[in-house]
Image 1: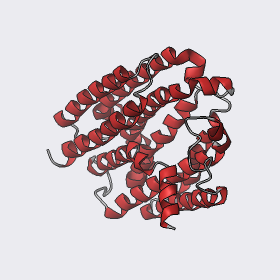
Image 2: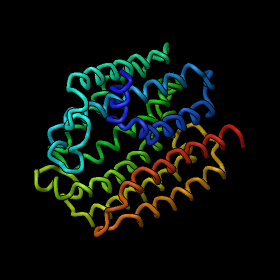
Image 3: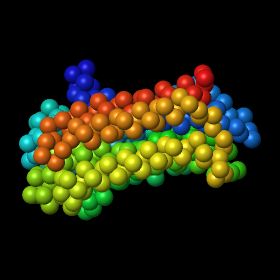
Image 4: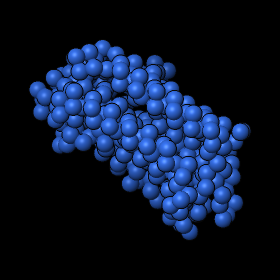
Length: 306
């Protein structure tokens, strides 16, 4: 049993939860500290709800992706040793894991009641997350679908904390929307970089991706453009009150974090060249983990401590 649980967590790359969870938590901290008409403040139950929903949603999405792609993975030398193609996990066990993870996600929204918005949007959100697994079969924009899926993390966290405020004033969610868009372009960009590894396989098997459509050099350029847009959106977040959102207390610590994030993204693009993809994994995991966790820590320090 413990061995199967370990393999299931390895299959969904549970450690990669660090990409989206920090942004959901940052949105929650912003929501707790921003001015509100009603009583909005830190709530342990909401924090537990965010973590449960994030873990359940991501686990369901990753497990479903492995199910849908198991035949593609089996033919790709880079992915042939994954747990389903290699026979280390059965299809049935992964199906049950996907169902249970989906139920955990939907049930997790009950932590926010009587705020019913998270429960209402949970099923549409789940369809978006699971739908990503099919996108590579019909569109080169699959990277942006993945980005959109992770974009929902900060937005849903904000709805969980301030759902009643959003009902009264839809512009209240604006900071989370801008943060979500930043996440979307960030994820879309580094997913394009990651997809360059499968350029030959995807082209040979008629799978769609930006590297197949634009070539590796073109994909890396578009990834860089996405990351420039991400930085611009991060710069916009403290000023969303100018467009009707609540005023945030982000200051100099946050600005330094955005500057450092810019440097990290430049470094990420220096690691990968069209003729040298050997350091893609370093760029994909190490740099992006620092980006997400660093922005969360800096934003939290700015809002709660300094």
